[in-house]
Length: 131
Image (tube, helix red, strand yellow):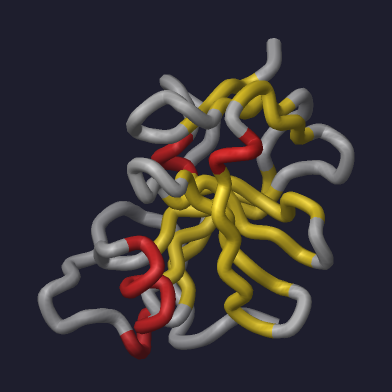
């Protein structure tokens, strides 16, 4: 059964037809700013498994590094996905409807986490990006 998701206001909707992978929470200062929180909860999508169902014209994109970026709803501001070379690379777990059937597999860049952030759970923690 495909996963569905979308933004807070409901204008933008998507579908994913393959299991999510490489599920992580990043605690770097850039993710804290981009996601307005302690970091990001993000999962990669299988190439070709993601499709926009409605509201693609309501997306805004922000390039975070050459070839990399974020897409978000221009009405409500929900960050929906990360992109690489124009294709959807992964989704924010908070934008997925219901239970996505995954758990955080790792916490990355915990060496630069916010001092007020208390990471819970048993997933491994890495000071930076693991090799």
